[in-house]
Image (cartoon, rainbow, N blue to C red; front, side):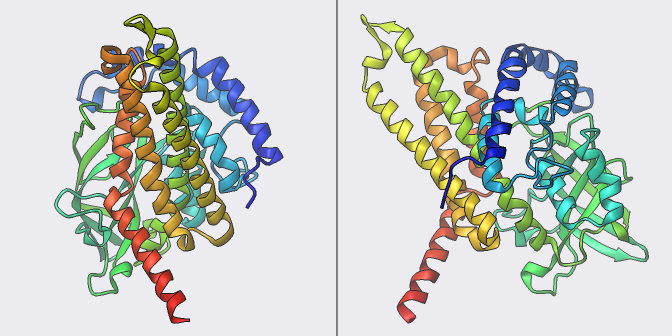
Length: 411
């Protein structure tokens, strides 16, 4: 295994770093204030995107820093999962950067679904405008009335009726549902309850302006509405879409989901590591610059030992994530389930630990938006649930490990 950066990664990383230092980092504080001023209401219908964001996106596109996640030389940067991982880490240092480069969830995952599994008409109608940054999308999977950590529990139905699919059910934590540019949702639901449990569900494309799509509310995550994206609760009440809106075909939902989640979890984890690096820098800056009881904070209360532990934890998480990325590129996401579960367990926990320790050094300043720490803490704690709770990833790791052990002992 060789985790050294390829020439393509080095080139993109240098350009990405320069763009962020010149255009994004100087604007972040102002963006946070503008975003709060425009979107302090829970009424998602009034949410707006600060105008400067569109200008930055256009500039990024002109500089070729666009769709960097997509492994296609024409539509994206043509990078492997391992090559893209350092770029995701660099973007993770900013809560704004992933959108500027058209590399943020849930659009990245939805674009990957359409790129790998969509047919030509679906790609023309939805993938192209998503790649161009003209619209945004939503992924509707989690449901409020079942334990969604086991996705086979999903109860939303997708029933064939003549030339249509009819969708009924309730979804929540549907990220991006409040964005003013959101136009399309990928909805996962039950199409054949008598099939084998991993072939019962399907994914269909549902335009958000379809009759019967009722967005009931946005859900605050740890008190924040995450405007202008939002995490919403939506009801599908006899929603009709054409038969051709199904992706791949009936029963392919879990196959598509695994293809979507593998690379996406690398993106999430590397962004989390980038966020942890930023938090660690804040830890050091605060520790060496603030004086208490006649000493810099870094020399008090075991903070130097904490610094060492946090440094090691971040580096371990990075190596584990790069290993998972290497596995995806070489053996595929399905065979790298244990490695993917491991990084989903480790990376968000490391980020949460680094942010928590940094907040202790910042004291009261860490509790408000004068620093990025509240946002980073929300990201960390949310990630420990968003792609499956820690317990599910532990169970997957243990199950795989036991299976491998039994295979060795039976040889």
